Length: 239
Image (cartoon, rainbow, N blue to C red):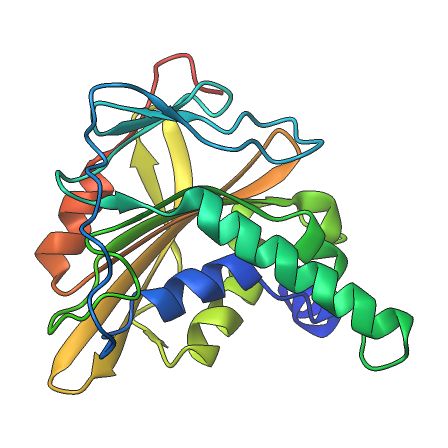
């Protein structure tokens, strides 16, 4: 089975793992006041290098990506951390390469270098103190070629499930198809007990333009997660 092949390949979705870790309850000191994601001027995001997918931009609280024909509504007051997450991941990859060059560790997997965050938005800065779940939206792109034999989005849930389990999440049920406009994606729902609260995560995946695209939303309630999913749309000309 193709899913087992992906598990044995030991690829790791670093960016999704980072987002899951960032959404956990924090006990650190509050960060600087967040800047609103609904600023009137468009904020262009750093594009993935050598990518056939544009980076997209946020305008008036909505993320737009023409390549994917995708729009995603960001709740008012949320903060964007897309560029920061990409920079941190690039630094980590370079550090792993340096260690590998001197024989102190294994080089980063090919999938790590091909993965980029297109959008990372949080209800508060990930390092800020909070008593509730830090709701978040993460859209990531990974080269499909990093997973030999990957033919459909459902297969991509092999490594996705492993990442979620590594972060302490339990899957609610098997992945299932979900239609958004004229686009069909595969969705998986997870939950994690965090003290007296429950963190809920839903990930939607699709294959397009030679990439595996994952859209992950995290919230403290089912309604919060569904509201975030409802903010995702595809234009009628999406293929």
